[in-house]
Length: 421
Image (cartoon, rainbow, N blue to C red; front, side, top):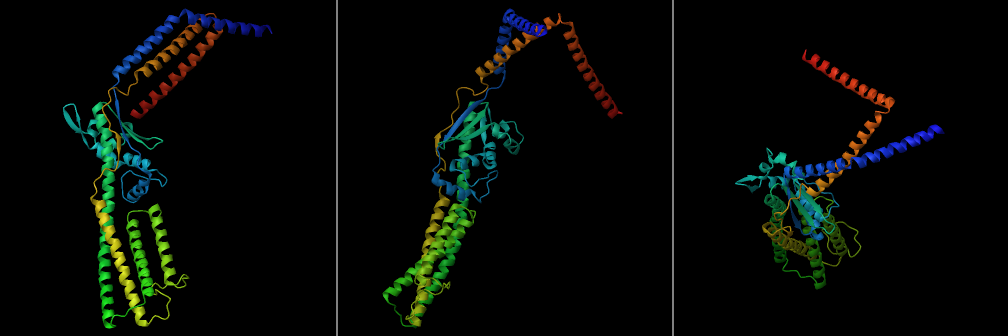
């Protein structure tokens, strides 16, 4: 019991001595804190300043997502990978992060001091390929909850920072337009081939119809039968056109693309309507050459109906393809901006780093704690003079550590000498 009281009393005395040491050396702690703050202040003047310029893009309409996915799902964009559940704003950010956009910006020329150099040279990189790896340290892309896209460029020159941020906006628009034009050109070429083929089939069907009518002295059908045949022909034409449209889409989109899935469903619906009209509402045959379940139509009338159907179907396909062809030409020639800029990046008036206040605060706090630690060790060292046993243990521990260091050093020198020999 007496021993426990002595231990408690010793701890209280040690704590009291430590607090007294803090009070007695308070000015040393203040000086340490002040010197650390001054050191931080000097370092902030020595560290190169960096300026951050930010450009803000408007959130793209969500309806544009399918068209963007259609453009970039199969078209090769270096460094671009798009998950299926991305939003339109995230698609634009992924394009901004792609190597295709990054290399274009790195190869752009910027005015610096009295010279004009490509960005990768300004960044002191040997090539744009190598400079691409350091782009995340220079520019950051973020998307707000509302869909606004921020492009923040950090450079040593405020004007170059603004120019780099605006360059990313310009190259994003260029890549969007080029890929859209490439897709439109591919669609136009494919549609043009189908249009030529359909025009040939339409001419042949019209000639066969005219020849048949001439040989059979112009056979006429009942108005109701003619209306049914024409309706079936129009449906068949729409089916053929939809199949061609699906082929156009599959050339630039994946099969699971929402637009492809929607087109397949429309094609299935047209086929069902065509079968119902063809077989009187209960399709039991898959023979596309039979149009109407009318047993009392003469053989000559049935032949005429087939020829009318073929001519009408090819005419419908030709009209739809002609519209798509000119639409594709318009898309290919379109040169409108694909992104909407809310705020153009401007040179920032103040540097974004180093953050002087934060540095001074952190270093002052560090200096304050270092001063306290120094006072603690001074007080503890003074107390060790009156504790020979504890001092001996410390000296023994320091001696052991010194022996370990000497042993490691000797082994290292021995191995080095062995390798030289």
